[in-house]
Image (cartoon, rainbow, N blue to C red; front, side, top):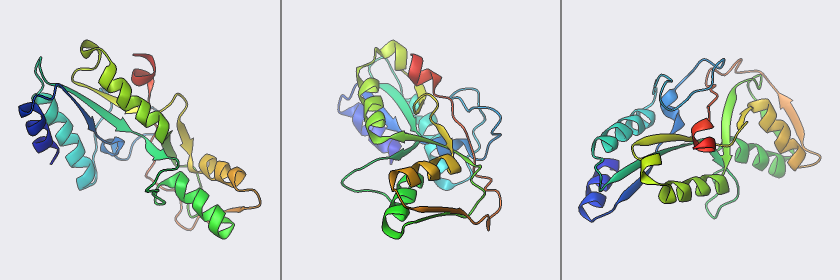
Length: 191
């Protein structure tokens, strides 16, 4: 699908394609280091993650002087929207606190999750469209904010503060969650 959009866009005279990729291509990682766009191993463990990584590579191959490709890899997005997703970690925690008065974490709360507010993601898209071609052409960007990596415990405690009177418990029934990763946002923050 993504490649077809790239082909059609190019054929219709689109000069810049901003591709929404995914940080899921990093897979399960070593949490001692933050993952960056170029040097960190890509370890996609789902079909979704594999297709996002493959599409990035193939779209970049189509790049020419007249057709610029920019790939954005958003953190997990949170915030209000007309089609609110309650399966997203922070939205889910706030929704549980609000509707039931309880936030129940089934792990120990130590896994890391990078998150970004929907407004910050929109700003990244605008920047990708407006930035000088030489700065962004053929590059990928982890989209997030400085210090935008949080543990599940951090997020749960923030949700609890957002919904006064809610109760937070860690059941630890799933043990330690291996789906943990921290992402580096220096490129998007400083370029």
